[in-house]
Image (cartoon, rainbow, N blue to C red; front, side, top):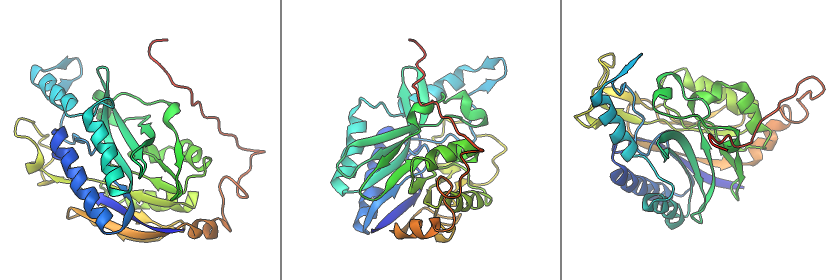
Length: 304
């Protein structure tokens, strides 16, 4: 089977839920018009990856201003019982695309970095909560558990996501390979030039297509009330580097590091089988007599 995939390199309307979802609709429509059946957005696209912010936190203290910033972040995040969530489902349905998008999910008083996988019929196939926020992300995001380490079987192929530096967790990658993942989405906030080596390795290791989507935004995209770290001297805060990689590690599309854009590639699933001819990490190239992976997929509720 062959289909066209799109990877988005752009920014949300930072900290504005309504306007960001309107922008998602515009971008998705453009990708669909250009023939895409799968559209992949970056990590935390709804409605901000807060790079350069500290929310007024130091060890042992938090400022009133930082609490106000967190409140604004919370209010711009996505409630899965809301009309905004329903609109997101409808965007996929109306444009007849499979939509993979990074959102900041709010549940009770906690935020989670989550990826949604939405079908072309407008149904939620599965979600994945980031299991290990990186460094200062832990200040504002909670931890996911093994219950969302899922893939979805679709007419395009087996679809799933691993978020940003989760991709440096070998056992997590293996857990996804073991589910037969074919369309491996890697939404990220890592815009370093070393990232492309990571996703090329994953494609080769898993013999799967990899779709890596990273935001592109500048200082001017931030609301004026947010205090950005003085360490971020450049005008461009996040510079992209989105790409699409084949099962044999070939770069099929590269967005570069200097613009907002959508990149496309035609995907032929036969390339996965061709790649597994000489390397199948969960098949003929595995040694289950030596190595064993155990994954705890039970939900971890804070109150039982």
